[in-house]
Length: 139
Image 1 (cartoon, rainbow, N blue to C red):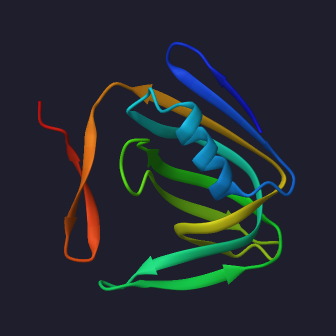
Image 2 (image 1 turned 180 degrees about the horizontal axis):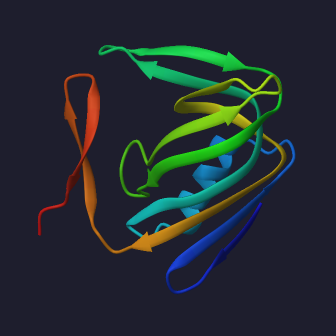
């Protein structure tokens, strides 16, 4: 994985067979000085992808073994919170069908190009029921 940071953006280039969740952990550790990052673009392919649908009490999981085009990621990386990321993904399968949901697990197939925008907004996670909601950190 390659990570390049400038004043406003972070470019991340991932390679074949890399574990996406492990790479997100590395991004969190290397960029822990940035309180809040949002995905502005994400393209590539994924395989061995596990996604979830929140039914109100737990994630109903679905799995796509074969390679699928990553059509998009909507999400946040907040290095100082637990959990530190919240991603929803959309993938296109070989047959043209599309699937999506909360990212739980995935491996890169070929490449993944991720662009993040940086922010100094301080946030925290607050447990309410079975979820941890994102909230602004009080001064």
